[in-house]
Length: 472
Image 1 (cartoon, rainbow, N blue to C red):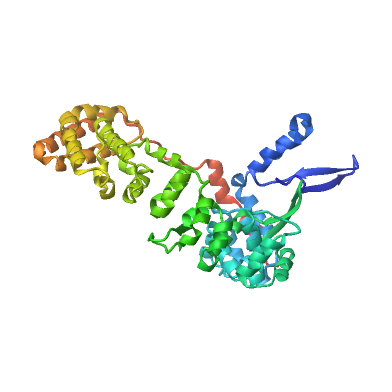
Image 2 (image 1 turned 90 degrees about the vertical axis):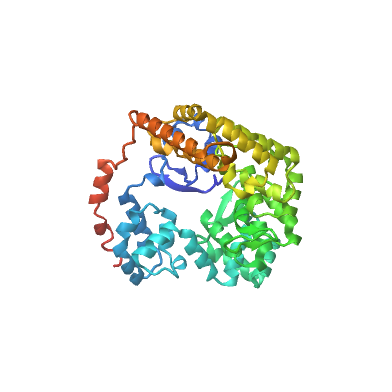
């Protein structure tokens, strides 16, 4: 939190400096309120001005874009070429003041061809353009950007030698040249801020750090830097363990870096971590991670219906395939499948071959016989249950689709024990009769429409006049 970074002005009537706390982050403001003791300063509490960027009017967004372009370092030719498209750009959903700032600086628009489509893309996918910008920077600048990345986002000033040496070695340049780049990149890619511990360098905007992470991960030779400096969530979405093949050519972490990968990912939320373990990890990683965080197996205590769509099914299947699923957990899963079948007529486990492999042939036959007797033999009971669970603003036909699919699936697989034609006819008649009755109570939601104020604003804002002298 940066409580020292305040703007000052002099008020003639009091001849005392006035301090302002300006931040674009809710969490900084919430923490600052505690340190500022607003209860003891009623005037300060009453003087708060909270600005939500999402609530800016189109006119205000246009003025922001105008200011950044008019007073940035773009050439007159560039401003002239983008001017016709700015009214549409500022009305787009992706408009952000920080991206407008980048549009006003040549550093960020090297690869931007000023067309309507590319300008929309510039605002809606700013990280892609940042990655291109970073890739074209000189080695010294890249190394300077690597320093905050290597130390968790905050590099105390004067910057210590170790991260500079590491960054210089990674990009093949001299440490002194790297240190000299901080001032050059100040207020564009980097920012010299200050807090109660003193000055420090950080990224001008969090998306710059994210873009640098994406740039680094493209080079396998800088893998250690990526594993050291990237956010744990980013690592979990960009790498795979040896032996794992995944579309998109993700970076493979070799076995000699497994300890570093384990260390970086161990603190992730259980959901994010088990997702990585399900699709990107090998047996070695998963065994070591389970030793470190055995509570991850507790995610297999419960499964929602349809079971095949539960978020932890992939985790269960991966552990079973790798021989890491305890037999007690497997048997517990079979019990959950049976419970879902009897209580919710859920036969979705039969749709996934990998999931079905967790169940033995004997268990599968027993479950199918239960389905024949307790689901197909009690269709009226289950149809009544499905109807009771209905929300009146949801289409009756759509509401019954999962039940209908489950019944059809069971009917096909339970042929040895039932008359399939009779069951299909009975189920079809029952579902049609029930949904026809439900349509009398159906309340389709009304389509949301823009308010008259929004329509008026978007239709009549004179944005062309605002940008009239942009290229003068």
